[in-house]
Image (cartoon, rainbow, N blue to C red; front, side, top):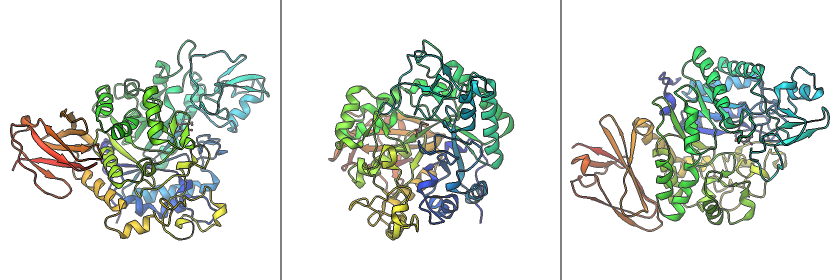
Length: 548
Ligand code: BGC
């Protein structure tokens, strides 16, 4: 029985997202590589988790030197993953289950194997020459930093064919498109329309801040870049409804805020700076880093929404923290030097938290209750591990662990043919951590996560409510209220590994009775006096304040 998707154009405010790469999810034809028919066969798992929208990482033809973020054809599917028809079947099957799907839009750059770039470098007079950014010297735009510090020495690379330098903010095989050229903007809109017409529900837009370059600037967040996005948004609004644009702008809160514009750029933006501060607050057993960054976060227009995440397909980025905090994070969370990459840590959630179920639950509860829409990274719902012996960010991109059988149920290929090796260590290997085993265990992380999402969905407060932070003297306790219309939810969390007590000032909320949202248990009625709460190690509670 097909589920009906909400026809509210602001659906993304209530949605829980699930991020995955088709390559690593499920292989249907036994070639060792995940594909669309495989992914389609697993939609029940995603739907049963309570997910509303799948964020699909790049599935385009690509030389795959950067996980597919190096696109060589924007209007097709990589043959390894299936055909356009397979994609359409997947999209229909997702929609039939009430799931939306957003795909990746890599605007900033193409692969150097894209026919546009092949033509552009062929000669200085070729029709696509100005679709990219060229220079006779490598000293323009000197104030632009290098992002992939571990591999790149310059943002310019010499092209021996046309004897000039081309500009790239990421890998040297990813030349930046030139957004000063109207034909580029036109072409990208055509790409968007191609996928929107097939029925996708929006885009996660990659590497947004870097679209336009200007000398004497950092070449990031420029007004001209905003103008490009405003143009694309206006076209989107003119032709479609209910679609979402999600910005990847790894920036400070005030800079990310600018990508919401006046409700005329992005609907959503990933809140990068919150993420490392959740990990900092946990290790320091002190809410201060989190509250500081939230205090620094400007309010956003009514139709806009933050996107929150704990982990994703990249390294846990530490670009938006101080040098001292970065060092602290490395010391605490990346003791194995192989776990470090660029300015980050290439590990998954469960191993970062030493596999401690209480810490995983606490962090996931924050993901689901702080202001914004949560994104779950595939595999984190079962506590999958990582493999830092693999290169680059492949450590956190290993195949999904479905069963304890051959290749974790991911593929019937010979194990050596898998796109990436399975995690197979004693603690996180697929014999110990897999979907099937957790389905059958009522107390599993999977079933706990389902319940958490279910409770989140029981009210629009988490997605839409106002947030007020309390400031009890005990900094190990994080407490806040979420309020929408007449409904208030109190969230209390113990960030420490020992029991903690805090006195909460809740007098202004009258004499409501806090009722546990998971167990229905009533807590003592609020009074004008400070409200004493005691929480066990890493314990949290979501409490409905009821007028009884
Ligand atoms: C993606 C990365 C990718 C980079 C360059 C990012 O922001 O998340 O995985 O390497 O863009 O395309």
